[in-house]
Image 1 (cartoon, protein in one colour):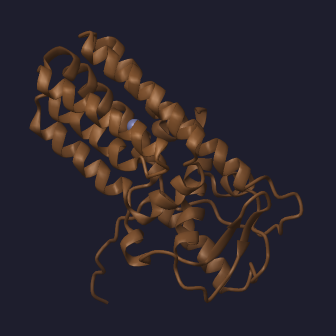
Image 2 (cartoon, rainbow, N blue to C red):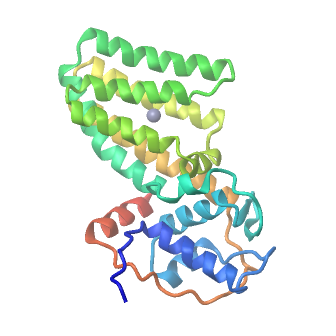
Length: 266
Ligand SMILES: [Zn+2]
């Protein structure tokens, strides 16, 4: 038999595929509610954020439906809500936010040290654009992206600026947008704006530590918002079917385990 190429997969992908196999095998039938996220995480030996990413991937691909206030239900033969192929190999959105906190925190600290006036004005303009969009009931995401990219550009390191641009490509991917759908409300955008103001003020006042802290706080709050809104949409399902699922075959790397622990904290 010829040697088969190995396909490295993201952890949430492994989880999604096991759940999909159970649906295909009829262990979960159409209309059934899936076990609660917590139970799946325990049975598979993975973190809840990874299960959450897997459930959203299955939703994007049309396999399950997340019913607000009720739970996650199996549905089949439904057209995917986004280009499933494009969504297949995405970074996990929750891991992405973690990475953004680390990298963009440093970029903000560097920007506080060396941004010129023009660059600071660009950051302030992006924030003003977000405020205006919210007032006019338009999507503040455009201004959000400009804000983060302006900071990365002001940090003076092209590699970091390019890295942050790459994060924004992922931020606009089907999986992330679906997750964001659960929490993007005017109230959460107002909180985002206040967090952005703290970052801007620290950069303006040339305070690198405060800028790093404010950016990390922004990303940590984003994780909390994601978790809170997901809980609303996906409460524990006491009457859910119990099906035995195998622990994930993926051996988590120490780094991944560490990240998951941090994600689970918020
Ligand atoms: Zn932001």
